[in-house]
Length: 105
Image (cartoon, rainbow, N blue to C red):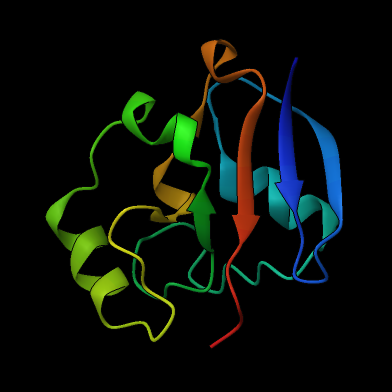
C-alpha cells in the first residue's frame, strides 16, 4: 500500500493507506470524511469532488469529457485542480498524492 495525503473540509491533513487499482473515491468513502459518492463511481453526481495538489496535477490522466462536463457545473470548480475522485485510480506511483476534499455543494 502507498500513502494518500488528504485534507478534509475542516483543513485537517491526514495520511491514508491507499490500495493500488482502487479509485480514490472508494478509499475516501471508507473513512467517511465527507465524500458521499452517491452514484457509486458512475461519474454522474459529482459528490466525490476533490482538488489535486499542484505538484501532482500533471501526473494524473486528463479528465474525460463526461467528468469535465460535471465538474464545470460546480460552484467550487477549479479548472487547474478539480477532479472527481471516482475517476482517478490510485496506483503505487502516486505514493504521497495530496488531495483536498472540495466543499459540499
